[in-house]
Amino acid sequence: MADNLETTVAFWYLAIAAVGAGALMLVARNPVHSAISLVIVIFHVAGLFVILGAGFLAVAQIAIYAGAIVVLFLFTLMMLDMRRLPEERVTHRQIWLGIPLGILLAIEGVVVSVGTPEISASIKGAFPPATVSELGGSTQALAVALFNEFTLPFLGASVLLTAATIGAIVLARRVEAHEQADFPQAASGSNTNDTAAQADAAEPALEESAR
Amino acid sequence: MMLNGFLVVGALLFALGATGVLIRRNAIVMLMCIELMLQGANVTLAAFSRYLDDQAGFVLVVFSLTVAAAEVAIGLAILVALSRVYPVVNVDQLDSLSG
Image 1 (cartoon, chains in turn green, orange):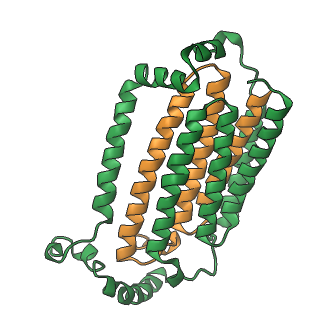
Image 2: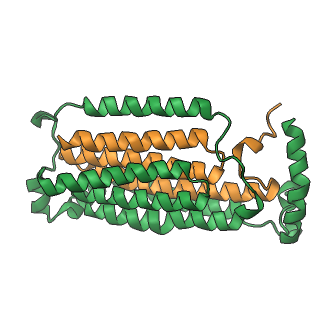
Image 3: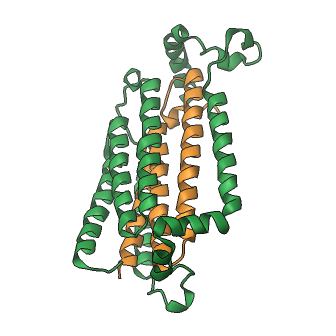
């Protein structure tokens, strides 16, 4: 990738938009607006991947993040029904500590990033642009690395996905009536009609414990 | 050099995500902020991979996407299971274990 004018302009637009949308995500009162801001961040980071010459990652990013993860967030927001839970305050009471720590982390990261020296030729890896184009493109080069050097982690990732799928199903499923003896606590919320009544019952209890 | 620019973007996204985890009360928004931190790490990995002429960083981004998908599935399932017992989503109200 040459550092020409078009790339520089695209980089600055994508960088500013990604960081700006990330900041919007923090200040949005409505969680749905935060999710939409996350989608904007994801699309601009995908653009940064395109500038870096990783087209496959950009497509995977949009398909997995915008297509699956954010949809899962929005689906859960809908399921938990935020309208029943009015929020007068969106920030935690430890905000006075969180903001300075965040600014400190940002300053530290920027200082280290700006101070990163030019990468010398002696530590460069095995995939210079000539080799990548000889293999047929960045996606082919990624596949060569993924299925040779990283085969075992790749298989581990598939095991992780299977475990996560089964775990999510087991955690989120409703407990049936005949199983209630085994899970007395989880079973109390298993009936939809009970949920609203239970909300009223649980909130005073929580208030009490807060005192 | 442009590598530094990408690193700055990655660092800023990570810091924004960390700040969000610290200051927001809504558990779902906190999970979204964790995704923002992962995005910052992904930008850094991809930038180093590109400028080191190495594919390892790109491969790590693929794994990072996988882990993010698994993490968000489990995290949201835990929130759904939790909301059946305690119908609150603000983390500072989930204080049954505090004495």
